[in-house]
Length: 417
Image (cartoon, rainbow, N blue to C red; front, side, top):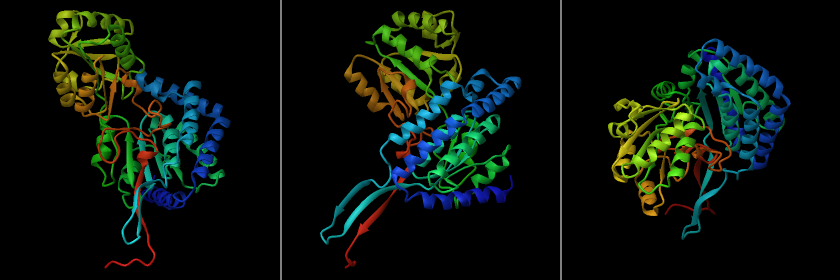
């Protein structure tokens, strides 16, 4: 794809965004419904196209976790449709009065939510990002430029083209959704230079991709580099609950960013709880890597080193460390963690509150699996990623997070005196 082609896409997106911004919530919701219906009508074609790309990935020896992320089966397809429908059910994030007052001279001042404009989404592997991103951007009144990975090129093109038809048939601007349909890095590099037209970039993928995007553009980037997520089992944790939360946090889906990567266990309950956790995780095929104190209790596991505390495995591996209380647990999380998702297992309200207040992460959970930190379980419908930044968005990035605001003042010939 030439520079002129990417430039044209960016210019078209900016123009579309200006026509999309004044649309009503009802219009955008109708478009989302149309997009879901259009995808359903093309279901078999989408599944067949994806199956061929999955077969190619297997033939090319892609890791099992990568193949799983690439796959659209009946369950994933239903997920895609449900996310479009659920995001449509959310309140309209636009035209909300966030603040306002009437000053002594009668000037009515309002702070009003508005779209950001043009959102560029650059992602790897997961074709459902195509539909999630389109849905969230439509709901929030933003035009979107999609650039998926080469391994899912045909699936992403078909998903995008189908949703574009549904959105246009519902009366939205022609270029509200666009996809860059080429392989290679050239088109991405060109997109990174389109700061005149693109307002925000959201990369989704490995640390290398995110780092390259963030360092290669003047466009603001909403990002997270790692999901080094922790679960701290406090001294008073109920053993059965601690085991269940550990297993679910780690095993429910090992290849995702909110899967558990480091388990911290209080020294006062470690002897009782660690053997139970080891047995449960061994049955699930998880390799444990432990600190020296952990290995005194579980001598057959692999020794952990400094690198393990800063590694996002995205694999059936879990590092384990025994800590001497909540203060050491919090210190470890804030030093080694990535600010993504961290959880505590405790019966103590005081410990829960201390953990919640002192752990500096986008999501902090109490007696809940780390796997719950996402758009669906947080009631956002659909999201375009999880941000570990503190500006502009933090945590799951849904429709509300893809808005900005403007100040509006209503006067009656008011002058500055």
